[in-house]
Image 1: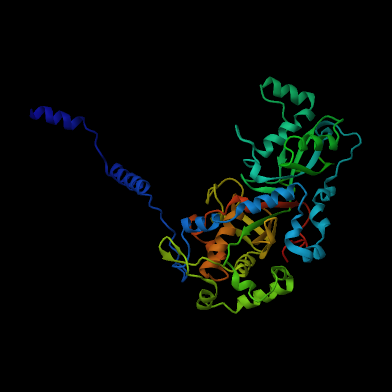
Image 2: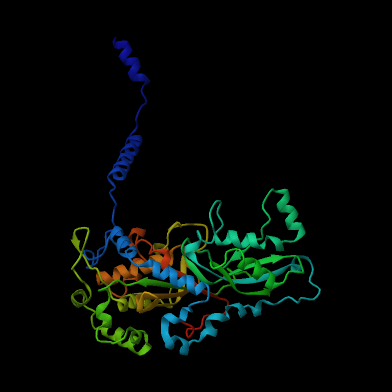
Length: 448
């Protein structure tokens, strides 16, 4: 009996200290998963008790009439409602529509090769295509199996313009007859675009721009539309040739939010003027102390998860937070998602923001005579990381509500974990406005 027990003990695997630690660690992880314990980032500033948790921020951002914004972008894509309607006559007088529309003509400097006697690799014809599409109708830009994506539809419509050699190669590989479309920047599911730039090349000489335009417009009428198409040099690349990108985020405001900003100012349209915006900035500057900010901005009428926290924020404060990022080359790895925060390979995480502003305006709506109140955030940078704009917007709103200092976003750059920033804002409010291929002009802005 004793021999049998000893043999049984010998047959058991020996558990080392390292394996014990690993077992204990996994047990803790499993226990955390079962109990749904979420570890929050330990902020050390004086606003830590007023700051929303990730769940609270998520709930605050999504509890909005987003359908109004989705419908507005749909009308803008179809040319029924210009984007500049959001910013009144001030935006028209300062910038003009031609400033926003001139993207398609910015690549003339790339025409470095003569069209005469082209041969070899320079013999192919490259087209620059400027597209607008409604994000709510697609599963993002990038082509994915079984999903309705913008790239998938565009490349399918371009298949009829592929040259014979490429068509034969695709046939031999048992692949569908599709063209190849390069893009300035991939957009996520739900994100719209008013002037997305892509390119397509072929060795066929008989392809006309209007034929490509008709093919793309017919693939999904009302959801995707060609703004312009032109033949450019082979050296043109919609992504690598771009100097800057402009995004606009429209954030619906619920009743009671940002009331102190418009009280006594009359019509909401007056708030968007440059003069009144400067006055608002000066007034917000006088509320620099945490106590004054808490008294004038924070409303404790409602509760978030049992704790009294702010349910309103100052749009002017969001503007001040974002302005601190202008003109600086910074690493936005804490504001990115779905990418490694620390990596030895791949593109860097540094981005240069030319313009970062926020203002309040009215979104045209058939159900509201004066429109619905919204906050517009305009961001212009040389490049953006994945979900960077949406995280920046959500974090700015969270910090403004908590009464954080103006350099709060800059301090978050040095955070050790991405939990320090808020979850991404809903994709419904985001739109890629345009892409620039010349140096950025500060006068070419939607929000001064």
